[in-house]
Image (cartoon, one colour):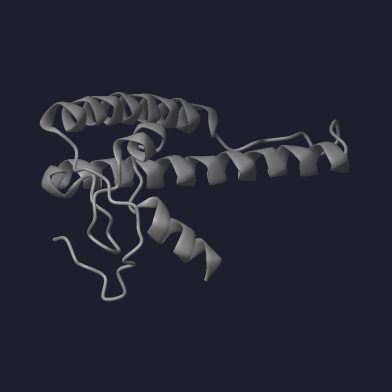
Length: 131
């Protein structure tokens, strides 16, 4: 459900809502991105087996490095999973896609082309980052 922010800036640049063709193109792009992310996540799972090191043959620095690499891979998996969830949320409510969650105004084709999962217009995003 679109909610209009009570402090909607009057000087905000108005963007036209997405046409049905633009929305379809962006959703197709998101579907491709979702498929790629799911494949990457599956590959990461297959590589993410616990690191077993021979304590006698491998030095302490090598063990620490291996553990750090494993932790970074796990963090990357979490980010991929979060991105997958965000894309799936978009597909659950495509009527609301392209509208700012903060002010309810259209986000704009340029921003969505660059960042298809954007939830806020540039004005609201800038405001949120400056708080």
